[in-house]
Image (cartoon, rainbow, N blue to C red; front, side):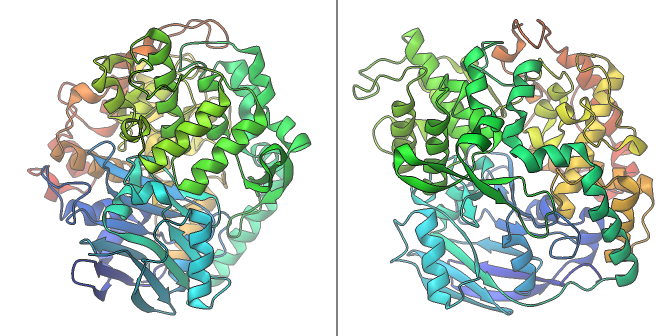
Length: 610
C-alpha cells in the first residue's frame, strides 16, 4: 500500500498482549486515515451501551497517508475514542512530531483496549512494542513525563504522548500532551487514557512511507513550499501565530466575551498577539516540516517562567476574554498550567466562565465553592480553579465534569454554552453565521476546526473548486448552509490526511500530492465525496449513541443579539441546516442519512445500521 506503512499495533492492556495487524486496505481506501479511519475501526466495536471510560472503549492514535512525508505541515495525529465528556464520538488532533514518529516507529496507528491493573507506559522503537511499569511516572506533570520517558528509552530525540495529573484523575476535559505543550485537547481523550492506566507512549524509529510517484510528489511539494511566501494568511501566522487573530476577532465580534454575552470589550486589545510578540515572545516554533511555524515560545517572568508554550488564540479567548481577564501574562500562565496538568484550554476556560456567570447570578454561592469567590476578571482565581480541576479537588471536582454537568447540577441547563455537551470554542456564530452549521453538525460537538467559516468568509484559502465560496458573513440561506456543509466535509478530509488546516496549497496541488503518495488516481470531485463519507459515518456512529435531530442546535445564549462587530445578527439555524442536510443527503426532519444519500457515498452496507 503506497502511502501507508501497512500495520496497526493492537494493545490489550487487560492482558498485556501486543500484536501487529495488517491495515485494512478497504477501510483506508474509503476513509483515508486520521479521524476518518479511526471512526471506521471504532464503528465496528462500540454500541449505545459502551462506557467511554470502560475497558471496551478503544483509544485510537491514527495517522494519515501524508503524515511523515515531505508534504509541508502534514505532521499531525488524530486521537479518537468515545468521549467521556460528551458520550458520543470523540476526536482530537495534535501537531508537533508525534504523528510522523509513530509512522517512523513502524505503524500507521495504534488501537488500545482494556485496562491495566497498574500504571503502565508503552514504547515503540523501530517496530518493537513493549509495555513498561509506569508507577514511577504516575503523578508527574506532562513535561516531566515526556523527559522521563526519553531518559528511560535512552533516546533523547524520542517523541512522547502522555497525560498529566488531569488525565490520571479522569477530568473529563483532560488532554493528551506531546512535544512539550502540544495537545490533543478536545473531548477528553486524556481521561480515556487515564482510565486505561496508560501514562505515556514513547516513539522512535526510521521507517519511511512508501510513495507511488516519488518524483511527481517531490515536484508538487516543491511548488507548495514555494507558494507559502505568497500566502498572506500563512505570513500573518508566521508573524504573530494564531494569537494574531485577536484584534480582527474583536473587530468582527468573533471573540466571545464575558461568557458569550458581551459584544465589545476595549480591554480585549490587551490580549493582542502583536503585544505578545513585543512583550513576551522568545521565538517561533514549527511542527514537523512546517514552513509556517505558527507556534510560539513565550515567557512569563512575573511567574518565574523563562519558557512557556503558547498561548494560541483559543487559549487567549477561553482563559482571557471569556472570563474578562485582560492581563496577557496572567493568561499566558493560565495556558501553561493547562499544559502542565494536561487540560483542554477551551473546555477548562469555558467551564470556569460558566462558573463565573453562575456565581454572579447567585446560582452558585460561597457555600458551594468552599468559600472561593469566583468572579469575572480574577486571574488568580482562574489559576486556582485550573489546579482544582486537574486534581479534582473541592469545587474543581464538579468543574472537571464540564459545563453541561455544572449547569445541570445547579438546575440551569440552558445557561451552558455547549453543543452535544462540548463547550463552544472562541468563534461566535453571530459573527459568521455559517458557523451555526459547523457547530450544530460537528461530529464531536461544538468545534471550530470542523468547518472554519470565519476563514472562508475572510478569504483564507477556501476550496473554490469544490463549491466553497466566500460570501457575506451574515448571510442566511440554504445555499450558505450547503457551503458550510462542504467546508465541514473538506476539513474532515484534512483531519483524515491528516494535514494542518493552516496549510492551504489549493485543491489541485493537494490532489496531486495525495495521488503522488497513494497512486489512487483520484479526481477533484472524489475529494468532496471522501469528506462527506467521513462526516456521514461519524453521524451514523452518533445516531447509534442516541443523538437525534433535536441535538442539531445552538445554545440559547448564542441566539441573543449583541452590539458590536456582529451588529445584532442572530443566525437562522433551521434555514442554514436545511441546506446542510440537503448537501449531505440527510432527511430534513430526522437528520438521518437517507438510503439514496448513503448509496451516493458508497455506504451501501450501512443503510440498515446505525
